[in-house]
Length: 259
Image (cartoon, rainbow, N blue to C red; front, side, top):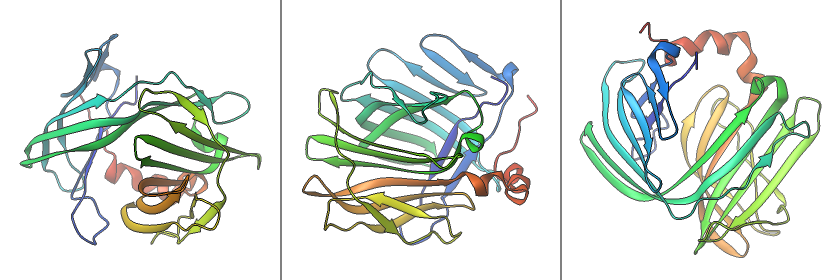
């Protein structure tokens, strides 16, 4: 409760990798309220009515201050109750809450509208991620009516976790064998990227959405379970995140609000 933020990133159309607008302002417990159906973080709020998650956004971007204001509505096709342990001790957990959802974006500032397919999940842990993990790669690919989600984590002690799930339109989660690993080109900041694809298949980076010193978010063209798909992918380098020079850069992108 002492360190809460709503992260909003709007991406450019075209080849540039920097988000068009980026907001991630950290707030203390006095600016945070929550109950069973609502989480309020400063001027923004998330509300769940049992069928739709409504995200009311009112944030200021960094490093150049501009406003992001409007509403995002997430309509899950189905909700899952699947919980996955990311490490053997159970200290970090992941839940694919809505592997597929219809998303409606209506922003006033900047003025834009968008609707399409989205995703909702949750991570929680008992400690800092950099003390438990060295790195991870995550991938979500819609395949026809189903969705495939891949999660590969390398633990601090050298062990690893590989999760591969197939989720049907009703939210039924089926573990599947992890496909072979495929190396991807590193990001501009030299963050290692990898994913999994069918044996004999390929995966390529179509676009890099976020390219930071410790994290990369990308759109892939891949092949899974015999189908070609466009997938969302992320890579996190916890070793890089923990370095002092990276920590010193964070306040310029993640300011802390005084109230």
